[in-house]
Length: 375
Image (tube, rainbow, N blue to C red; front, side, top):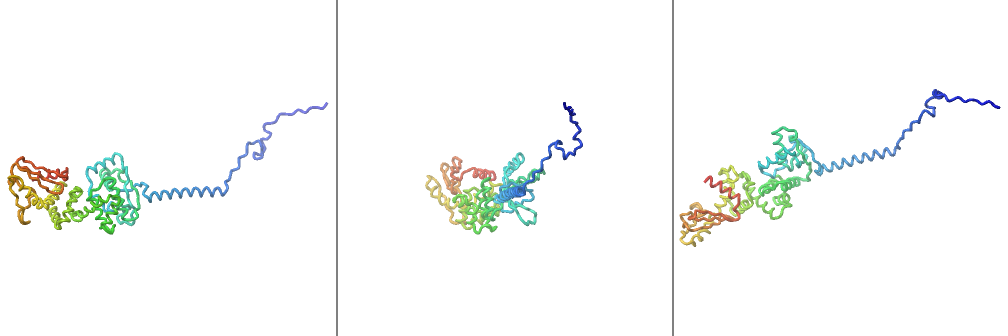
């Protein structure tokens, strides 16, 4: 019987001397690094570059169209780039705006246009937002806080000077309604700056969206601006009715504008009410001779009334707006049309003077209060 051979157990170190790179039991071999195909690399780079170019173009278009808000240093903005349409700013409104900026910061951006080659170093010209820019400058001067040192702005690029003026006017019309005088004044100044070829074109260009009737009234105020802009202290206080009455008188009487200018220069006018008093008095003086001619027949019809003589010439006594109490019976009542929309009634016995008509408003009341205090 054949002898069996005993098998010994495997030794632990049997394969320990084998080179690691040649051993099949040394563990899994590292996976080969995958190398992308060249065409895939080119396609990926092109896609990334195209995306960056698209984003860049979108940003450039947004900036060119004035859709991007940028922060600009206050001293880099020239607020005189355009002739401003707003003549003065109400101090109460300015304080309210400054209070809002303190509490909430600037919520609405201004509009500016880039400038090139300015000697003063200004890089931006103001189109709209004069009140916000002024308020921030005052706040920075008072507090020196960095948050007031810069203004949020939309950078726009109008196609022409006409477009820039239209942008300014439309922005102010939307936010704070301009007076007829301010509207007419910017039309006059824009014409003088050579922005428009004629006054008619200026009115049509600046106020193209206004109704024709409103544009016609603005055109009437142009006459007032050309005649009195150099001497008026409070032109924005002139109401539509008063302004149109003054323009009508300037058209009817050639020397009225010169006399009115002289009267304004000679008068002390520390307040708007006092300036309005001068304007109303000038109108009343022009209407007085006509009123006297109309009043005399009326007085002669009143029982017991003493007729009032109409002055024969301008050299006679100063024209009277109303008869005196000596010439009217104590129980009589005389009514006189002073100006368009304003009638005055007087009854000596009752110690009563009455004003009536469309021109009787709060503005007239304040003017009368001022005049009576100085009388």
